[in-house]
Structure formats: C-alpha cells, structure tokens
Length: 73
Image 1: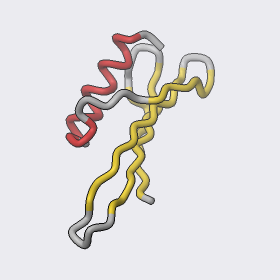
Image 2: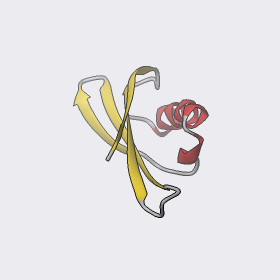
Image 3: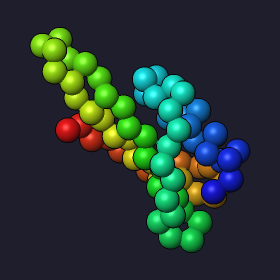
Image 4: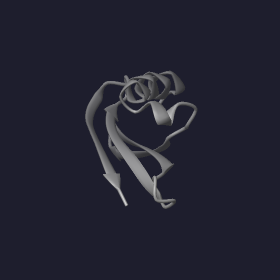
C-alpha cells in the first residue's frame, strides 16, 4: 500500500477517533488490493485503570475505506 493511501485512510480515521492523531498503523495485506490497517491506543479510566482500544480498517489500494471496526479489551 502506498504511503499516500495510508495517509488518506489515517486522516479519515482520525476524524472519527481523534485520540489516534500522530499514530501510525500496522499494515498487512488481506487479499490482492485489500489491506488491513490496525491502530492501537490506551486510555485511562476515572477509576485509575486503563483500557486499550484497537481500530481495524480494511481499505483498498487507493485508500478508500471498505470497513472500520473497533474493539476494547
């Protein structure tokens, strides 16, 4: 996946999840033309514990988002 396409996807993801600003994704190929970009961050809760969150984005070579999902753990 080209750097420009990764940058375009990251801009769209940061609009929805501002805490990901400045993070770089882990990129892997799912199938020819489709890529999985994984963004992770940790957030502190009011009780002193922290929660980690992963945002998974499936995008094509041009940087068009096909699917976006998030998990907390």
